Length: 405
Image 1: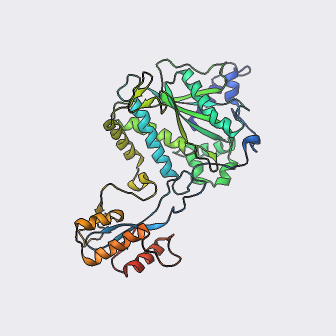
Image 2: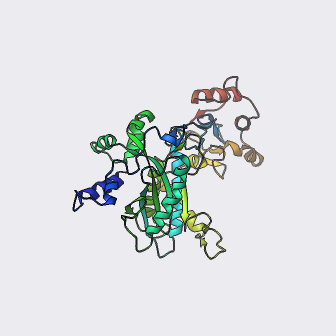
Image 3: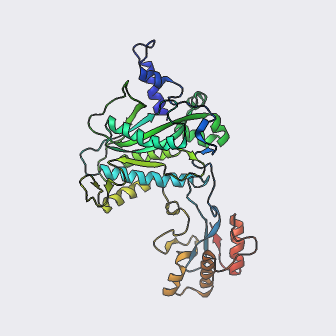
């Protein structure tokens, strides 16, 4: 967002005749290119939410036995993660995963093609054009049409309902900061305080591959079009610098998208050559575009996940199926050389192995608890703290073995 406003300010400062600015400059110089009354008028009664300022899943934060050592019966504990974009604890996981998927799609499109340039632009509706929830979502396709008219081959569209007030920008610019303005807001202010530092102003971020000749903003544009920047060129499936630039852009934009409470529409929508029906794995029509091989996409995904720091737990979302293998690493106890077995793989492990009897008992107790076959003590079926989970395990296993998170 700071890059966008910096571009707008530079546009005003470089105007050759400030007393008679062009239509584009007038619109760009408004405090809100698409300003609206704060009560949102006909926009609806449901509150609009930033990611992480909503509800968690029903078992999010509940503790459970994650793995058991094959030699000593040591139990590792973990917490369920709902992976919801509304969850205060999981929204960052959602943004990471969505950012990785978007990066794989866009970088996969660039792979092996002559037109590898990708750009970021913003389309801002004229004041009064977007006044309902339906108009907000329909505006995505209109923004995509405008972007393609300017020279985008296709694009991802991320809709943003708000902009930061002049007061918020002054506070941000007065600090020695190394993060974007919205990340700074989220880290330092409550939801209510953020509402005081932002205002309603729907606009649409465009990210996509461009043609060699791009058209600039024009007096006749129905909605304000602002070119932000080009992203780094891509040298191949292993080009981590290019992947990082694309991923970082998506990840930042996802941090301050928004929706009416309870809405489930996707935050990123694809258009043109990147549309779901066009960019496909098995292109059988002339108008379809073939995706690169699964190996190429896996390579891009692997490198992007390394950049994003997506852990196995985060990649899963609900803590149910954490790995394809039953081996989760070495036992953390210094005096033990065993390996940690995923609790959900215990049954298969015991069919092929014979651990010590007390370890077998612990494994079976943890497995039955995870599957709901045995009940924890009354009032502790959904332990909300590590201490409660330890009490449950001690109750179910008779206090045998060690426990850690």
